[in-house]
Structures are given as structure tokens and as C-alpha cells.
Amino acid sequence: MDVISTNQIASIEVTKALTPDMDGDAIGGSVNLVTRSALDYDKRILKISGGTGYSDLMGTPLFQGDFTFMDRFGANKNIGLTLSGNYYNSPRGSDDNEMDWGGEEDTSGNDIDWALQTLDLRDYIVRRDRFGVSSTLDYRLSEDHQFYVRGMFNRRNDWELRRRIRIRPEKGDYIDKTHIEGAELDRQLKDRLEEQQILSIAGGGQHRFGLLDLDYTLSYSFASEDKPDQTDPAFELDEDVDLTLDLSDPDLPKYTITNLASGYEHDPDNWVFDEVAYEEKRTEGIDLMGSLNLKYPFVFGSFTGEAKLGGKYHTTAKERKNFIWEHSWEGEEDVLLTQFVAEDDEEIFILDDEYKVGPSADSKKVRDWFADNRQTDANPGGLLEGELNHEDSDGDNYKAAENVIAYYGMTTLNLNKLMILAGFRHEITTIEYTGNVVEYDADGDYEKTTEVTSDDSYSNILPMVHLRYRLTPQTNIRAALTSG
Image 1 (tube, one colour):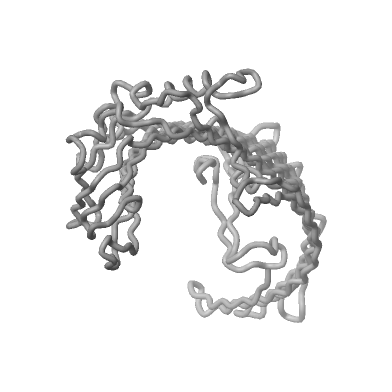
Image 2 (cartoon, one colour; image 1 turned 90 degrees about the vertical axis):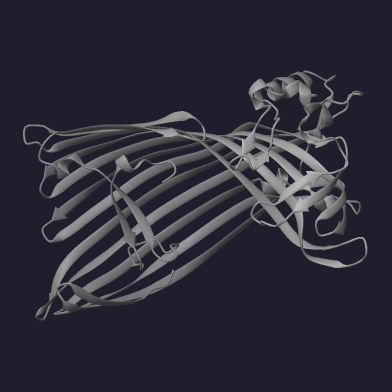
């Protein structure tokens, strides 16, 4: 529901125990989103809503709005059209501190059971935009025959800027639990945009031929997630630091640098560029499904029942392509944080002024500098030399395809207060995966990447039994034995 707005949904169906007419790959049940239909209403409906709010931490407003239009057309009002759309804009912010605690040994050889190893101070600026449209066209030929076409498109952009300073006692020597010599400080700016989109189209029909019910569905969906041009620069303080820690409040540990001038760590002239990570990530998937179901009621002695059977074909494919480069500076002169600092980033305090995390690099200045100095085929003289991180790039990339052919049969028998549902589902699955093996030599240096492909097929017969006993009109006792 991060991507899909609630105004596009009529209801949510939750099933706790599987029945044979449901996919066998569900774990603990399934959730089905049901969209709106104009044929469920006897009049035209137009609904428009909007709202706003205010983020006190960010000092900015937020907005949201949506509309829904439903109407019936035709001489017999047997054509229904539903249109809906929504937009949501939410600028957000958050501050936090994150600590790692663990065992260390002091310089006298004594164990410190609960030592502060790292302290992260983080400031987040986040903007989330969501846009969605959907439409449903229903055609009721008669009470016994109905057709529909549905479409939905949703897009969500999530931009995040994270400014982080990390205090690293673990890099130094513990004189005791609260005194460390030779610790390190580093800074990182994380600037990333996550773009998600979902497109789905479905069509189908429902028919009744005497006592026989027939329904069928054909659907297609496409989803993608992009993280383009993520640029994360890192800087290091040019001096190791001696620390005195105040651990009286483990949720708000404090530090004092004792070997440098007061405020030394807040002077951008004292921060040296270390590296910049550049990432391009994309994941996409395609889903195609077709199904058909037949249902027929029957009488068994003095009891009633229903027989149902059907089949389904489902194919899905997914691919991930991640490329992560780590760039180091090959120039003779150090690059300092000073040239990237934004004027309004000098004084950044978090957690009710408990910590100061400024100054920080300005993301636009970093991106401009990165583009000018990155070593590429078009700019062979660039002094930012990049190396592909094969472990996190090749090692994460894959292609996956799955095809499932399924058929089922089930019957429901009503014995006064007792209902018995029994049946089976047979699924035949074929899968194919393509990934990479990343190899390193004995020294840990990259050697090569080899593409590998694996395929498999298997068949599952899934028997299922459901029992329901009605104690009162408001009280049921249920039991089920299912497999999936």
C-alpha cells in the first residue's frame, strides 16, 4: 500500500486458510484488493477531497487530494464507468542517533563488556510524492452475462537526503570504558531518489447458463523500481581524536574531544574527502495471468451443495540490475568539505539540540563536482577514478522466471449446521534463474564474474478440507487442514 492509494480500493478481502480455488503459494492466507464498480451504485457519484498539514520539524506544508467519479450509461443503465485519481505530497524529516555496543578490551588487558563502539548522528530530509489513476468499465449484457475491463497506474517517488556523522571509538584504544585515544570521525551524505511504478490491466467476464456459473480473467501487470544517480560522498576528519564519553544516559551518549580545539570537528576545513559511491539500480517485473472457473449447485438427499472446478496459467519474470561504483580522488591536493558546504548547513542540531551534526555537504555542489571530475570515456583525464563494486553489483543481479499451470476441483456440502468443503489443487511449476558467481583470489582481489543459470520443475498436489459448524447465527466454529 506504499504505492496504491486507499481511494482506489473498494474493499480488502483477507483469507486466513486457503481453499483449492486459490493459489497454493500463499503462506498464512492471502489478501485481495477489490476495486470499485459503478454498477454497484444506482446513481452518479462524484467525490472530491483534499487535505493539508504541516511538518513542524521541516517547517513545510504537506498536501493530498483525490477524486472518484462513478456513473451508469446506456438505455438500460447497463454500462458502468469508474474513474479515480489521487495525489499525495509529504515532505518529512527525522533525527536520530544509532549506537553499536559490544565487548572490547582496554589497554591494560581488562574486558569491557558493554563498550560504545560507534555513535551515528543522523539528520533526514525526505519528500514523498504519490500519484495514481484507475478506471473500470463494466458492461452488463443481462442479469446472466457481465464483462469488465480494469486499469490502474500508480507512481511513487521517495527522495531522501541523509546527513550523518559517525564517531568511532572502536578505531582507537580504550584506556577504560569512557576514555579512548586515537578514535576516528567520518561523515557521509546520502542523496537518493527511489521511483516506483505499477501498471495493471485486467479483463474478464461472469456468465450464468442455467445453473452453471462461468467466470474468467486475463490480467497483465508491470512493476519497476529505479534508484538513479545515487551519489554518496564520504569525508574523514584529518586528525584522530581522544574521547571522553558520558554514558550516564545510554540512549543519549555524549562525547568530548580532549586533544583538539573546541569545535574542531565542526570546521569544514578539517574534513578531507575520502570517496564517493555512485549507484544505478533498477528492478522490474512482469506478470501475466489467465484463469477460468466453473461452478454448479447440486442436491444430495435433503442437503445442498456446490461443485467447483477450474484452471489457471500464471507466468512471471523479474530482473534486477545494480551497478555500484566507488570513486577515489587521484589529485595531488586534498579535497576539503569546505568547497561543498551550503550556507544554511553550517548549524545543524538534532534531537532537541542534544547533538550538532553540521556542517554538511550540499548535494547539488557534490553532484556538479562529481560530474566535472569523474573519469569516463568522454573525460579520460578526470581525477575521480571509479571501480565497480562487483560483490554488490554482479552479486546482486539476477533474472528469474516462473510458470505455473494449475487446476483444481472442490465441493461444498451443507449438512444443516455443518458445512464441509473438500478438494484438491494440482500445480505444475517450472522455474529458471540466472545469477552471477563472483570470484576473488587468495588476497581478496577481484578476478572474474561468471554467469550461471539454473532451472527446475516440480509438481504439487495440495489436498484441503474445511469444516464449519454454526452454533448460533452469530457464532461459528471453524477448522481447516490445508497445504500450500
